[in-house]
Image 1: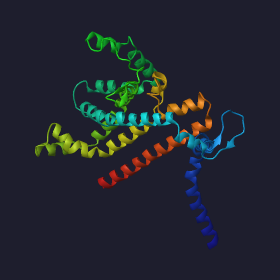
Image 2 (image 1 turned 45 degrees about the horizontal axis):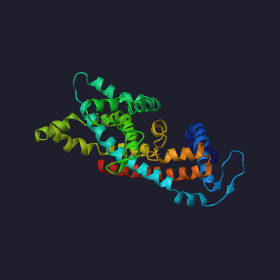
Image 3 (image 1 turned 45 degrees about the vertical axis):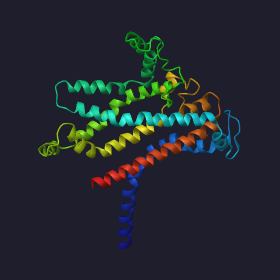
Image 4 (image 1 turned 180 degrees about the vertical axis):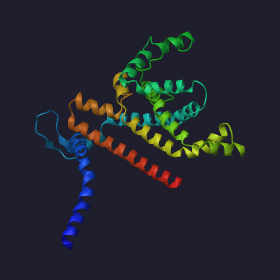
Length: 310
């Protein structure tokens, strides 16, 4: 009788532990078939020579990685991706915070400004890319605007010049960066806005009594309390900048002279234009390691932020 009681009790405990996993099982199957299994296949293909669908794969070891090491175009795309990170991430960390502070004011018509700043987020990147490509055209709105001001009468080759600004960033790459920044400002502003509204007003009132008011209160209170949100936005924007593709594909096609080509676009080019599937998988593996490093950095920063708050 006692043994039967313990068996029944153990069965209930096992049932309670397994029930959550049974609910997760359909999602795990879908994720395994659409994410994990393709990732495993891509990892395997990076060590093979596989160029045409239907042909047998041939193991070639680390030949693709040696080829990648000697590939000047890959290093150029890696340089462009790093420039993208350096150029986009700081702006997307600072500018949305300033916008969030502005739209967090209790003023008449402020909801309209919130909507206006967030509108680019809901616009498809394809639509945004085409619209900005028209703006950047030789006789587009931007060049006409500068000509009317008497500045750059010959126009600026926004998307067709490999020349570098200050000898660092190609004009074509900087033009694409501007679209990414314009598209992401509203999204990160909302994240900051949620953080700002979680700060009790009493904190600002107490700081005002101590003489911290105006811009000073944001330096003393807002920025220190918003550090977890700043870290979150920094890592998310860095990952997004590393994976940028649509803007480059629509506006420049990676040109001219690979001046705006990023790692993801090079991966796409090798896989679907040159049909170098194995080599594309090798590039994808490098990209995965970069994003994995950024994700680990995010976890470390979040953990440190939680420790500081506690």
